Length: 184
Ligand SMILES: [Ca+2]
Ligand SMILES: [Ca+2]
Ligand SMILES: [Ca+2]
Ligand SMILES: [Ca+2]
Image (cartoon, rainbow, N blue to C red):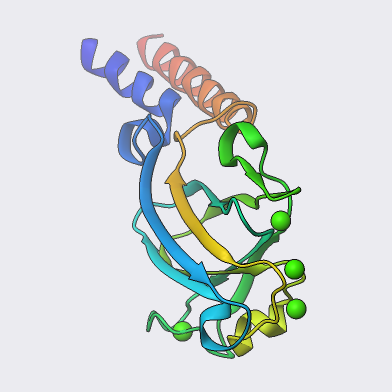
C-alpha cells in the first residue's frame, strides 16, 4: 500500500523524480574579450546537455551591446559547421536585474527547452547576424568583455508544468479506478 503511494507521488512529480535537479544549476560561465573585427570579434562557448529540460543562456557585457545565437552542434565536434542548426537568438531580452546594463543597451537572454546533445553559443556586438556568427567575423563599434552563462532550470516550472501535472493526476485517477475494479 505504502509502495503504491510512493509510486503515485513519483508519477505526479514526473521528471522531478528521475530527471533534472529541483534547483537551478550553472553549467557554464565563460568570458570572451570581443574585438572590433576579425577572429576575436565573435566569442564561442560550447556546452553539453546531459538531461533534457529547460535551460537559460544569457550575456553579461557591460561595455558592449551583446547579441547571442544558440546552435545545436549536431556532429558534436565543438565547431560551428554549416550542418549545425540554429536553435535560438536574442539581442536585448535580459533584464538589468539578471544581466546588468550593456552600455546604453541590454544583454541577451535565451530560455528554451533543450534535448540531450552538444550546443554552441556565439556572441558579438549588435548588429550581429546568423551569417556573421557562422563566418566567425563581425564589425563591432563597441568592444570589451562579455560573460556567457548557461543555467539548467528547475524541472517543472509553472505554468509549463501544469499540463504534466494534469496528465499525472489523470494517471493517478486511472490507477485508483483500476484498483477499485480489482477489489470489486
Ligand atoms: Ca559542429
Ligand atoms: Ca543586446
Ligand atoms: Ca555595434
Ligand atoms: Ca554585423
